[in-house]
Every structure is written in structure tokens, then in C-alpha cells.
Length: 358
Image (cartoon, rainbow, N blue to C red; front, top):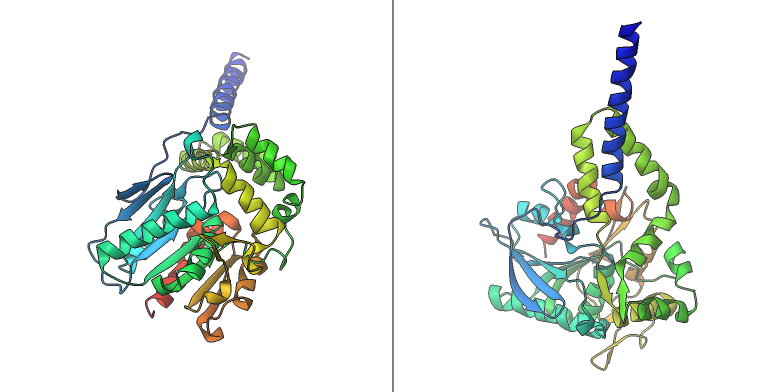
């Protein structure tokens, strides 16, 4: 009898401990300091931009690579998330000289920066790389928002880009419907109110909540069910991976309000990437037909945020010879396409092979 009582007591104590561990991990706040997996140094600081250089002692690739990560609430270290999930390290394996733009959380001082400002900041980064390497044309890799940003830049400065990689980015939003496209149809006043509620800045938490609400079962139930299984089985490795991803995914930044509102209006409402005259940078209309370099388009089979068709439709709006336009499909979703282990090992390795030829 006492043995049974002792066993029951131990069981209850164990369940209490596991429950406590579960709630501590489930309710943990994201760390504000986000880390990079690979050694690097900041070589340029300008407004909301830090340009990071990832030194590589084995450079023999013909051209440097500039990666433009997204700024949709998350941190730019999506390009160098961990030792096992790092686009930077994939390029290092192919002996590239690698640079990444880190977009900082906007302060009130920069609330009025718009798309034009971000393109001009990108040009400062490109010019710094060209100055340091003495190489006239570089490879440009854009992820998600960084993808349409890279496309705009290449259309304006085709003489500076040897090859363009556009991954999981909305180029022609009429090519496939998505919840992002549907949500963008809300009255502009709705988005303006979000910005005004933060004194001219767009709170990345709102964007993050929108992404979560596209997959409510995953983000509000399934992930906690999986966490409980990890805790119950005392799987420390999986729990640490859960913590690491939560720290990154739940982290959010402030965006310049003007930049956010212009993106909603020009990219999504007016499909401006494929409608010349909608977007103007320094007085010049953005026209993808100016792009004539080799083009690699990357889509995710399970990407519900940017359906592959929105990316692949870009081939219909550029001047690049069709035989130099390549479509690559990842088996993952939006984030998986950009930093998933399988995508980095397969799709991004193929991309590296192809860029070696340019």
C-alpha cells in the first residue's frame, strides 16, 4: 500500500515538474538580442541598415554575394540562423565572399523612410561591396520582402548585378491568390490606423499575429502539443531546438510606417511590381523589363504566404533570355524554403552551382 502511495507521489511530483517546465518554455518571452551563427563584422552603418561581411579565407568564386533578408517583423539572421541552417555557410562552402543586409528595428526618427529610401540604402551596400572587392558586378539574393526589393534594385541598376536570385517573394500577386493578398484588400484606413497607433511606426507584432492567424491550428495548438511531448519524453535536444526557434520567430521589429504602407498599397493593392509606373524610385519608374541578367526564381511547394506562382510569374516580365531563367521548387513552406535544412542542402546548393557559371 505504501509502495503504491510512494509511486503515486513520485508520479505527481514528476508531472508537476514537467508541467512547470512546459509552461516556462511555452510562455517564455523572445530575447531581444538576436545572434548570428557565423563570425562577421559590420562594415557599414547607415540609418536602419547595417551591412555585415562574413569573412571567408577560401574565396575563389568570381563574384561576391549580397543577401537581402526580409524585414517583415523577424530578424535578418534568417540568413545565418544556426550552424546547420545558414545560407551564409552554404555560400561559404562554394567559396563566395558573402555580405548580408541587416535591417534594424526602426525608431521614430526613421518612421518616414519609404521604399525609395530602402532601395537607396541597398545601393549604398552594393557600392561598398564593389569598392572593397573592386568587382563591378555582384550576385544579388533576395528573400521574401528582400526578393521584391532585389528585383526593384536590379531593374534600376542592371549594370551592377551579374545574376539575381528571387526567393519566396511576391512579384505578380495576381498569379495566385493568398491570404496575404486577401488581407491587403482591407481599406487603406485600417493599415493607416495600425501605423498611427504606434506613432508612425508599424509594430512587427501585428505582422507576426497576421502570419499566425493564417495557420491557427499550428501556432495556437499543435506546437504546444508537440512541446508537451518533448517535455514528457525529456527530449532535451528537441526542447532546445524549440526554444531557439521560438526566440527567433516570436521576436519582432518596428518598421517605418511609410515603408509598410507603401508596400501594402504599391506591392499588393496595385500589383506594382508588374505594372510599370506604380513604383518610382528617385523619379524613375520601376520596370522589370530592364532586367536582362540570369535569373533564378525559388518557390516553396507548401508556401501559403507567397505561393510559387507569384514568384515564377516574374519570368513573364523580364528581358532575360528564357534559357537563362530557372525555376526551382522547394518542398517546404515559406520559412522552410529560406532556411530549412533540406532546402539549404538541395535547392540552395543547386543555386550555388548555377551562380558559379555567371
